[in-house]
Length: 160
View 1 (spheres, rainbow, N blue to C red):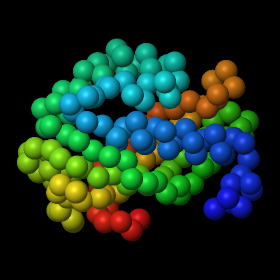
View 2: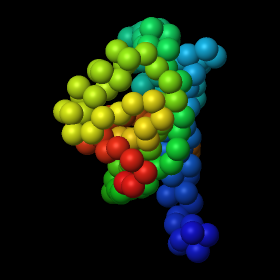
View 3: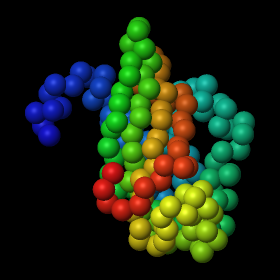
């Protein structure tokens, strides 16, 4: 793997690192000691303002507390990094593997409903979600401008 990293540009390395940090911040969470802003330092200023206006931190805390969620980041697999012509923006598509260590039954019911009953996710089941990030250079640093997570493409298990 080290040989592969040397073939990457500094921007690609920075984007992969940012994307991993983002996935960890979103999925390594515990309702008992939750930071609802764990990923905020990774966003563009515009995105951060939007999140604050929309009460994102309170929504995150409410979701995790009501459902007693403890989850952990396991791994990620990059599918693509596509740069804009001016090299100031990039779209990153990658699979993030997460494990819900514990949660209320109603949370799993909702999670499995979104998964269209293809697989059943329960305590300790690893599953993968495809994330798509729009990343922008802001004052020379890569930051996340937009984020989407698939709901229908959740895959259960350790294989991506």
